[in-house]
Amino acid sequence: DIQMTQSPSTLSASVGDRVTITCRASQSISSWLAWYQQKPGKAPKLLIYKASSLESGVPSRFSGSGSGTEFTLTISSLQPDDFVSYYCQQYNSYPWTFGQGTKVEIK
Amino acid sequence: QVTLRESGPALVKPTQTLTLTCTFSGFSLSTSGMCVSWIRQPPGKALEWLALIDWDDDKYYSTSLKTRLTISKDTSKNQVVLTMTNMDPVDTAMYYCARTAQRGFDYWGQGTLVTVSS
Image (spheres, rainbow over the protein chains, first blue to last red):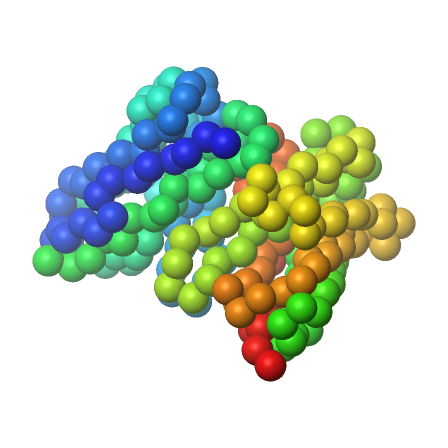
């Protein structure tokens, strides 16, 4: 199975900060990576697919980059609504796998 | 408008078999490239992918759970069913179904909480 490792597990930041979350795959997944945002008590929401493609309706402050084994999700200017959890997920090969998540907290 | 809704028991006893149904609308699982997955999330923990069924009736499972899982579809009813045998308290989680068309899970159900307890 492909292991997905996110870092950091927790990130403390302030409104307006630029933040980056990293996701590393245990083997190459090309660009078959998605990023999700999850608010407490809600289902995850797709933000980015194919490593860098922005899902329709998602604010442009979210961006993704990377290929192979290393990927990043960047939020260019944190908004109050962004202090929640984020997950990466590979869909290069079965079984599909998620990262362990990153919680973005208010500093 | 795409929607998915999970249904099933809220409480199951240890060793019992769990059956969950995902009823969807707004797309057809017979369309090439379309797939439905089950994903779970124990309280306070990370998402875990469980299984996927595609438009061609191919099925894929989590390595650690594949001996306990069966996924199936009824295209005429727009439903996907997941069964999980030999339930244990560690299987207590929110269970989600989600659609994917090879660009991540773009639509999710609201989830159904399953508690395993005697």
